[in-house]
Image 1: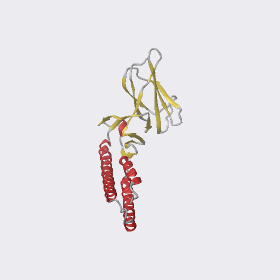
Image 2: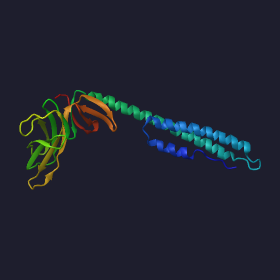
Image 3: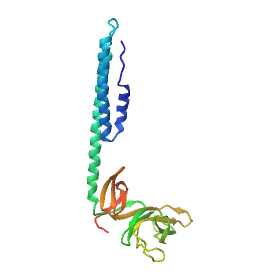
Image 4: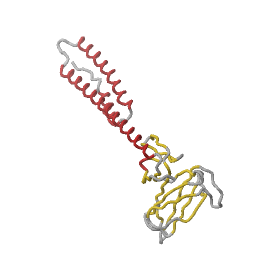
Length: 231
């Protein structure tokens, strides 16, 4: 007598759970397994009660399904342990990031906050340029300040005093750095920009720890340098 295997869909779901990183994934699969196991036992009992004496149920099928249940249960348990390890690792990284508070960091990016008339940026030229132009852009995309930049290859810093091209003091807030550079042949040189600031806090983001440079958030993965000195 053939038996119905209620494990097929659950086994597939459990395999997909391997990549899950939320605490609810293994718990949900475990609950489904318990419900399926109860249904399996009820179905098995009914089959035993109504089996044809001349064509009795194959005991190998019964044993095979029990083994399959045990395998799925072990897989779910492994997923649960993996989720706990990932959670501990994430927590450890975030806790370790607290050591950045009070330090000055430089991180890849172009947006920084003007606070008390100062915003500090950095830029890197891969090769020497003939001319370099540094521009500060406000949140509406308007260029509020421009000046000539360094032309030598390498890392350079730029501190903006918060004044526009007419000498007017701009309000505190977020501003962006734009760097344009060309070589002696007029070819564009792509500069890499960065933001510099003192870390005032740490929070967990979707892709990992985020460092607060005042109101500016930068991913820990974007940090390129750390200094003990503060701004």
